Every structure is written in C-alpha cells, then in structure tokens.
Image 1 (cartoon, rainbow, N blue to C red):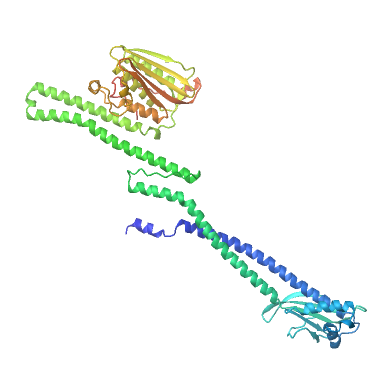
Image 2: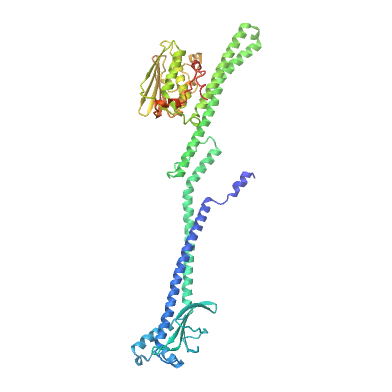
Length: 521
C-alpha cells in the first residue's frame, strides 16, 4: 500500500459525523447547564415550601401551648396535641381550627413533632423517633444530618403569654422524604430531556450538514471525474445556493474551462505546427536527397537547391516565431492585465511609420476624438495589432495603393478602422480569416510570404483585452477591419509623460508576416 493510500485510509470519520458530534456536544452542554439551573431553582422552591411547613407547624404548636403560665407537663401536652376527633362538641371553634391544623400537619409522613420541658425532657412525640434535642433562645430552622440523610429541624422556645416565662420547647423535624422523591423525579425527567435533546440535535445536525455538504460532494465528484479522465467535459452543476459554495463551484468550472482551453490550444498548436512544417521539411529533404544522389556535381542544381532550402528554412523560422507569438497572445491576460495605453499616440506613431516605409502608398488618417483616449492594453500589443492589419492591407492592395485609417469613440468604446481597396474577401471566406493558417488564396499568400497567422494573432490579442475585431469586405473592392476596445479612463494631457512611450522601429514592420509578432514579449 502506498503512502497516499495509507493517508487516505486514516480518514475514516466523515465530516458529517464530526459536525454532528460536536454540535451534539454543544447542545448537551447547553441543555445540561439549563437543566441544572432549573433543577436548582425547583429544588430551592421545594425546600422553601418544606421550611414553610415546619414554620406553620411550630406556629400551630406554639399557639396551643403558650396559654399556660407554668412549665408544661406531659398530660397537658397530650391533651392539647392529641385531641379527640369525636369530642368536637366539647371544644370551641378555635380549638376545632387548631385541631384541624394539627391533624393536617401530623398526617404528613415526613413531619415529626416533639415537645420538651424546660429541662430538656421529652413530653410529647407525634411519631416514634430518635431525634436529639438542641435548646435555642429563638425560633430557628436549620439543615442537619440524621442517619446519613439531610433533614430540616425547626426549634422554638415556648413562652407563656401571660408572664413570658419559659415553659418548654417545640421541635419539628422534616425528614424531606417527599422533597427527595420529587427532586429524584425531576432529575429523571431532566435527564430524559437531555438525552432526547442530544439525540434530536444529533439527527438534525447530521441532516443539516449532509445538505450543506451536498455541493461539496458534487464538487468532489466533478474533480474526481476530471482527474480520472482529463478529456472529460464534466462540470459542477448549478448549485442554486447563491452562497460561497456556489461561488466556489463557478470558480472551479471557470478554471476547468480555462484548463480545457489551454489543453485544446496546446493540441491545436502541435497539430498546426506539424502540418505546416511538413511541407518545408519535405522540400528541404527532397533537395538534399537530390544533391546527395547527383545534384552536387551540377553547379546550377546545387545553387538552386541551396536557395530553395534556405528559403524554406526562413519560412520555418518565421512560422515558429509566429506560433510562439500566438501562444503568448493566448495567455496575454495573465501577464498584462493592468497596462494602460494612449490610443491616439500609438495610432499616430504607426501611421507615421508606415508613411515612411511605404512611400508608394497613400495613407489617410481621420482622428475624430476630442481628447486622448486610454484603454487597458499593453502598448506593444496594440501596436502589433495595427501593424498586422496595415501589413495585411498593403499586401493585398496592388492596383489602388491607398489605405484609410480612422479613430473615433462611441459611448464607452474606442473604434479603430483600417480600410484598403485591394482584392477583398468573399463572404464564404470572411468567417474563416481569423483561423490559424487560413489563407484566402493559398498560392498567392505563400508567394507574399504569409503563414496565415497574422490575423489570428490580432484576433486573440484584441479579445484578450475584452475587445472585438470584425471585418467587412467585398471581392474586388477591398476590406474594412474594425477594432473596438473599452475605454478605461480619460487622462489629462499633462499626464502623458507618465505613460510608457517606447515604440517599435519602423523597419521591424516592413515584412508582412515575418515580424508582425516580434513585439509580443
């Protein structure tokens, strides 16, 4: 097993389960904290109720026994704290009320009532118990432990109402059995609530993250398809989520399209070069074979073969140079995306250069712009496009040697037009002139030294800078090439010196297709 396999084998836990797990942990912590707060609050309320029961019981016992002026005796306490339920007629209304209160309090299983004498002797107990007596100077309710459990103990000194003398003590013990039972039930309910909350959060988190990861899974599937088959046209489908993942999918599709385009261009490049080099290589090989067989002994044949081989070698050199220019033009946006150029300046320079190197031609220049126009294009590339179009116009203008050049603006675009009055192009060929190696008249084009790449280079350069190039032509009447480029800003005249003013030498543009791409660096 390879290292890659080992590394991929380690990732056994899905992101969905990780996300669901940690979400559940968070929900568990929140629910537990909330449950603890509820439990504490509820148990405090229950405990406070138990304190109130003790306080009420102490008040009831005290109100019954403090009518005595002398220390309490066992018989007196028994008589008033264990009344006969059948002797209601012998008691007044107040006694009935107190008796009812005592019955209610004594009937509670967890309540123990004890009465002690001044000396601490137990005079009364509501139920058998082994509680200890602790004297106190005032009513107190406190928590203590008995038999390993927490209990509430309330104790109150009993003072005679008449003279305020101490006549005994009342002690009430709440074993908190009801409190503990209720608290236990509440704890079970909260525990079940916690488990249900964690389970529900786990399921919801898993479903939610599964839905959130669905676009990522689609992206991963697309990447795997392209990885398995580089020629695959697989693309991430429209996610319709309008979020970061949708942006990522669009970016990936754009990258795959661009990569596919580069691969196609590379394959086309190899095929075109192989096709175009086949003929000159065959010509050179034929001449060399002829010389080796018998031609080297004939001076005329030798000279003719060497000249033909040299001519084909130059043509191959020009072809390779133009193919490299075209390859660079196809990647121009990667290297010159931020260049700004003064169109008027480049246009005027190329116009003057061609007037100088082609004195037998008449050039007209119409500049309809009011101010300098600036576009986002590398200066040498704009110059190269103009040189290609002007070379093409001159090459096919044999009878009427006249070329019109115009520069104008409309809305946010600058328009460049170059018109010749030469042979023209048929409607059938107009849509093909920007294809690689395409020549309208192959025989005549080859005689003029063209390889059929100049217009392809111009077309690719203009499109790389978000412009467009078009052609209007008619056989026998000439052609008009138009270029439209977006204007990025109008700069004041005083800022001209900040722009790059380097220009191409006029003699570099003399040959029609040999050096029209030499400025593409």
